[in-house]
Amino acid sequence: MADKNLCVNCGKCAAGCPARIEVPKYIQAYQMGLYYDNIISDGKPIDCIECGYCSLRCPQKINALAVIRELAMRDCVKNSMEAAL
Ligand code: SF4
Ligand code: SF4
Image (cartoon, rainbow, N blue to C red; front, top):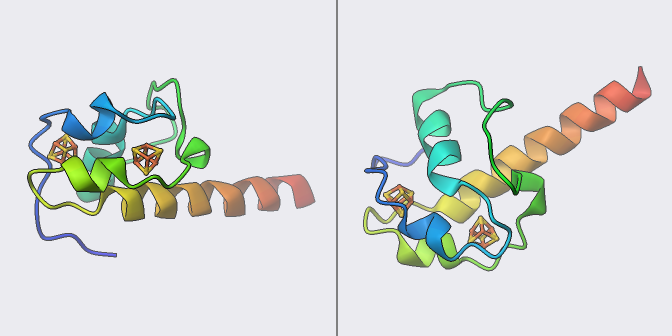
């Protein structure tokens, strides 16, 4: 999933996240192709309730919900693979 607009770290997405996810940190890591497992955040992508607030608030029109959902999916796959070992 590509997003042509870059995060400017305004924090508007995280300000009202009911799952207390540090959304900007995940968005920036995603956009830069960086590792995100060690991001410090009360909520993790898997805690996202898909309310869509982050996407609605983003002045850069970044589909933050889609990014968080994708990262949550990656974590689910990773956890499943680790549990199967
Ligand atoms: S969609 Fe998920 S990440 Fe975005 S504000 Fe809602 S709970 Fe937080
Ligand atoms: S609202 Fe958009 S631009 Fe602002 S921190 Fe969140 S993702 Fe980045």
